[in-house]
Image (cartoon, rainbow, N blue to C red; front, side):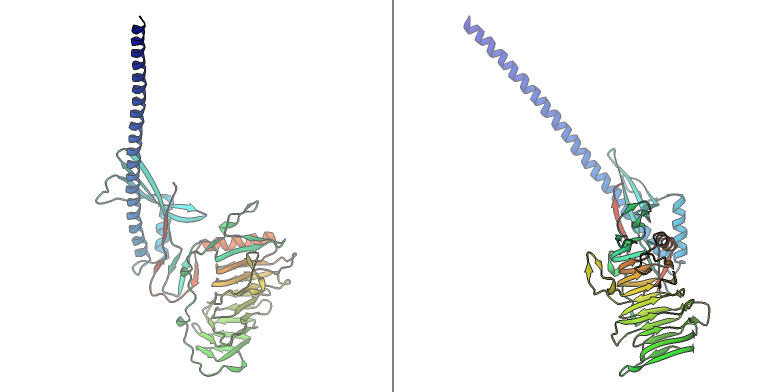
Length: 440
């Protein structure tokens, strides 16, 4: 009897072990099947994503070729491209492939808003073995060279290599290149980091009328006024101390520094096609100073090779671009430059309460200050149509409301497109296309 019971127990034990093994094997098999399904799904998803990315890359190449054609000699530059971009605001453009790419469902081009800027978006959809994937690639280029010594810029108005910031009426420094939310809105719609500094080269003085001076600089200051009807090359420091009229297209080159105290400088036509080239070979700290009397008007462009530029507008108006190759070599205090180490400054005295400046500041390596004085009760108004390119850019307006009005104003103007002087291109070219994939 006892032996019989032991045999029965052994059988039950064998059955139990076999059952456990079957359950384990079933679990293992199910796990392996699921793992295999997941591996197959991920493999298909990866292949679908690669197909979608391939479609986006092909469309990007074709899109850039199309834009270059619009800008090129056979196109009309900005006008044609703007018309194309406007068409994308209303309707997405679906791309037709011939021959078709296997697995690629469709690719669409549209305009998208990324960080406050309009960019081209390429949305690509693919399917591989029943797995769908879509990717988005954004493409943009902010600069277009033209044949008239200008680049056309359409983007944020303050472009800084290092920092763009404003100073509040409490002497607080606020970075404009990062998102700072407050009741007034987002600061970062006004400024951006320039990124690759090669996009913003220093002005090439080889494109200026080549100086004919030789020997030592003249020691006595050269005073000029009246009418100039041909290119002039002054071998020394120059003081413009009276009204000056310059024939259309004439340039004035100054070997030393340039001081302007005249109440009016104008071209013989209605434009501001006077160009002053300031070489400052005497290495004076101040290369260019413009301080017209109240209600004065200066219509000219200024190119400074080295040395500081200081402009004081006492209810006066400056129409023209300021281009400076001077570089910031000053001190950084708590992350910001010392105000005395500026390279370019446009301001007004406290009595004028107004800064009228119609033009752009192009000084890629410079510390630029534009705005009122540092008096807490200052109520300067900055009327500016243009953009600012620099290493450090300080907006130093003390009246809170007017300061915001100023930033809003130049933001709106820059969105319309601004011309900047830079070099001497021979044909339309889009510069430095950039693109990357984003989560979508």
